[in-house]
Image (cartoon, rainbow, N blue to C red; front, side, top):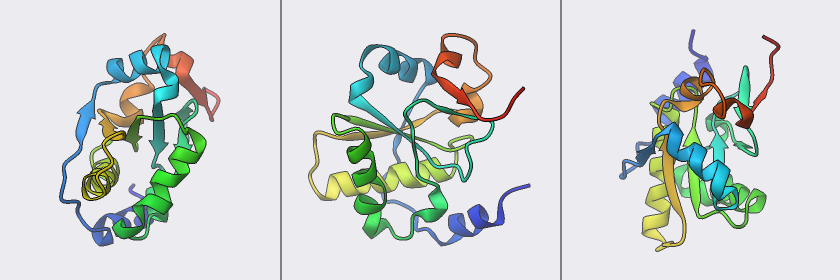
Length: 147
């Protein structure tokens, strides 16, 4: 059953002007293996069960209050955690709703403020698509629940 707080957030948080691009899990894996310093990952889920990607920044979507505050509520937190990031990869559980809204909102901000040295994309399939994958994908997951 969907968390009522997420359902409410999806209703009230405005739709972005931009539709962010998707990045496949294999492309994210390559970045994590070859140039991890260039990417930052935002996990938008309320909790991180049953696991999360190493070094991801936990920013529950329901804590984002206004697209006009996306810089201070998300981008600044990501840049603080990963100052060398050139790409922000956003995900939620399936990356179909929350991640799409937030990544689009970040892209709107980047476009409106002429920030060419930062990109944003959505992890296709979200964490639900990543967790069932075998090695080497599993080596980038920190489990939160015992199997």
